[in-house]
Length: 362
Ligand code: SF4
Image (cartoon, rainbow, N blue to C red; front, side, top):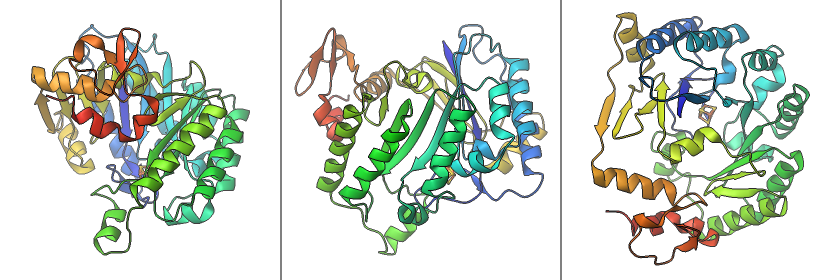
């Protein structure tokens, strides 16, 4: 089994908290140049899985894949299909921005036609004041309208992202966001605690004393509210930040956590051979395009994992999931609970999982 991740490095504006690699407001023609370069990388990497892995999941992330025009989207899908056997793909996810879904009429039919069967939409909050502070392009009403449009277009596997644990978020506002999210009944919800990414505008604000993170107890309480509300609404928690209706977990992300091979295409994308080699592309659209225009793969970086690195990855990734890790990996059970033949972090300790995991690393 294998997966392909494809990075679309464009955003119409930058969100306050975000540190992902992306270019803001691309000039006219930038997509065309990028898509041609991407075609070059796809062709040069066509043997990446060397016949060992069947591609089961596709994931277009970013950046903002929904900024692509329907034609651009079709072109990329066709380039992938020309180099990889996509006949066994079970899950094809595309990240979308609510504003694009609400305003671009051709987008959803193009996604459907290309075989996209899962949508991940960045909602983040249902409070307009907080959305403005995050510099998101949409408001709460647009997110709800976009969700309805996705349903009308027959998408039956939708994930929405939410954010908690930022200064100014009161418990009652977080509860309101959780209730409105579950009210829409998406198949999947990812919820992340706001952190200060060093590449983000928020990091600048923090350095200037204009932003301070809330206390840990506040964040822990909001995390407990998240777990409680989603459980009440029938969602299973299958990872620290991920909740789903039964059977609707993200296959693509679950494969990352199981250390399955994946190929990452586009600037800043990471690849993993399923064994001990991790590679990444440079975080620069210019470097990426210039290399491929000269017929070469862009020079990023690579890391060969030692047996200890591999062990630590299995612990770090496995213990963040509700399945946990095989018993044989653990010598001292400590705070972990037994789940069949596996050990896992008790659900009420997920909030402090990072400090627990540290105790099990080599
Ligand atoms: S959160 Fe998404 S839309 Fe916002 S800047 Fe980051 S990649 Fe772009």
